[in-house]
Length: 262
Length: 271
Image (cartoon, rainbow over all chains, first blue to last red; front, side):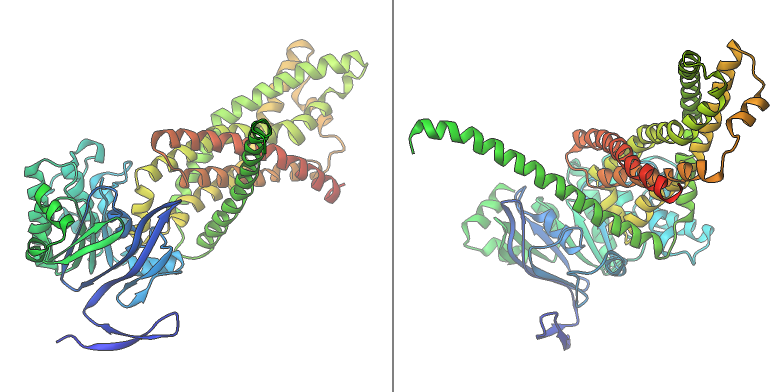
């Protein structure tokens, strides 16, 4: 049974916090200009759990991930990582928290002037200066083997396919052995076979590493495969949150429509 | 209000709102670049230091600008030589040619031409490179990997510009004086030794050193504007082009404007 303990918040209150809770998002609001993207979103993720955030394009799913890793600042609400509110943290303080997180961008965001091996070695070179060059090189090969990309070390990102870029991006996200993995549309733009391979890879990594994961996707089949719980976003709000069976049993019209169209 | 009055007032309202928007945007730009500079300064003075990246940028900014700055300095030297000879001959002051060329190149044209050449080459390059990284989320990926992008991207580039500008200015000065002398010698033989002795006769260190080291301010302006425009880009390929253009245009403009202040400052401090 999870134990609870008191957490003092910045507002001077005291909240009970579950020590298995690793990501806690509370009433997040975010607008870009006059366009309200998130309107009071609250979500929790516990250790070892995978939460899929579903929704139509433009419902703020990627913005939610960017808020969780601190690349955007919310207008109101809070994001707590391991019990620590990340609001107002300086970039170097936020860096301490980000070392425990891995992020796979929608288009992989590989460094285009570096080779595949150099891309994966990049976070290791900065945060694991204790490792010798040969140990770092071994670690890079191990990570590439984990994602099925051995033998492609010296290729440039422009020389590999979209699916391979996602695998390399995933290997880079895992370089520092994160506790939390954030994946932004991991199967977007991939053919069904490659999508299935990425899903299988994510499942395998979750089983082996027992990370908490938040996967943003519009692909219901992928979400069903890899997630323990699903949350459906619409017009900036969480419409429903639960298992796939909970969604199937829901009477909410939007949920039925989403399941029908997917 | 009559419809005729409204027809007269609406364009005026639009013009006033548009102008106020531009003024707001102007001050907002200064505020944002000030905040950006503060972030870079904090990152630059706190460890870990990115020495390897700094050395790479010193090469990019310094060694790779050498041929361009050399050529530009040489061209300026020839132009000034031709113009100076014509003017001085007209006023019966041909003997003043060496000192006139030395002072023109070292005090004014050498620093400014170096700054403008580096703004064009380095400013555009930095602006485009960082803008391209921004629109492809590479800078976000750096930040998500718990690496400070101000420390690894902006600080080494700005520091490299600050350190390399005075050295490149010396290169431009040397090239300008050499080619200026050569252009003069083709018409009226004058030994290089005689040229240098006449040109630097009665010269003091503070006649030339402040003008050379003021280019560190040029370097700061070029590097800061290029890094800011690159790292705050939005809008895909169009945004990258806009960032590169703004880096060069604003870098060059503020470089020239800063020279007004720097020249006055030097004249006061080093009379």
